[in-house]
Image (cartoon, rainbow, N blue to C red; front, top):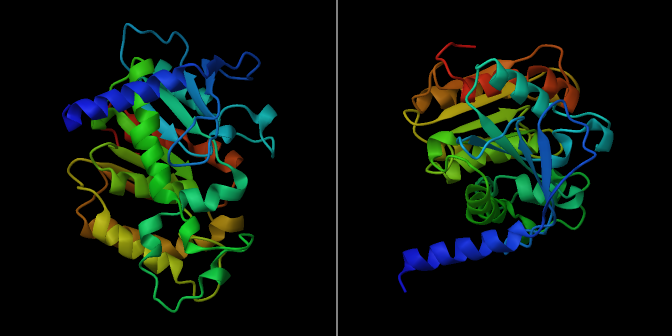
Length: 314
């Protein structure tokens, strides 16, 4: 049997196994659409966790939809179930933008995080290897006791998304499977991972939205070596500006207060890689903090920029 046939066979087996665990969340508090859960996916790469799939109102198998993959999936749709009673209001903005024909039609796939594993899953793993050999890595993450380099799992997290989850979504839902209709988004560490995803898999993802990107990498400290390690990775790996779109933003309050100083470097890298205002953004939102409430206030901006039906600039 050829390798190509083997791959298709394995994808088919994965899709079949996952399909038995999908159920509609009947009591979800939504603005519009329907929410389904793939409960505790068994993965070769990451610890099992739920994945939520939001389908717009009047979702139809007679048409095709783009797909937006998002991190921290339990924080996206229903504030009645979140730890801080906040949400991204993804269903609200997506519904409004699609109904007004501002964006193409799309579904949203939200990968839940596991609190104690979140940093290890979402840190851009290859950026870590840009640190100097004598770096005291233990001091870099407040709250992550017993850190070992072997716990880094960002590469496996992406393998799960690309090799296991995406084939399942492609097989079960009426979606476009090509790069031009596949997007990834997140905030904070999820912003870092969204940047990492489009760099590691430029043939899979067309656009990445990185809100309040946590350039500090871990707990902010003086003489932090992580930002430079991350920027060195970006300089070497950002995908072609001719075939991709990148969105970054940042606020100025709470944890976001640490991000404005990195904005010039982000702009410099984007420019050096050939990006301009037509295919990249790095926007400041003065007075906004590091929270789902802040992100839901401006979510329409990256959604319109990445999935918009027109070339109108934001």
